[in-house]
Image (cartoon, rainbow, N blue to C red; front, side):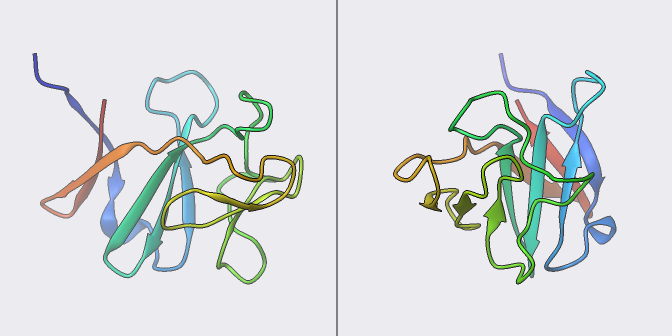
Length: 113
């Protein structure tokens, strides 16, 4: 059985250099987030590896640090590289965010589960 794609948003709804959270399962809180860098998208589960179920954002869609060059965990201040989710500072040093598979088709961003 092939994984079914879930529509997250249109690509033009995610500005370059920004991040956005999504609730593809309808659980009432974001469970994945996407960061856009030009035409590249990076998607991760919205869980800090330090505690496992701690959401990353300090407010809705706010997953990046002030310089917008790292993903930041609001609970611990840990910093993660956008390109691969690896922790580069904080209590989970050496751990990584869990990536999710994304595809872009016809100008829309899909999560492949």
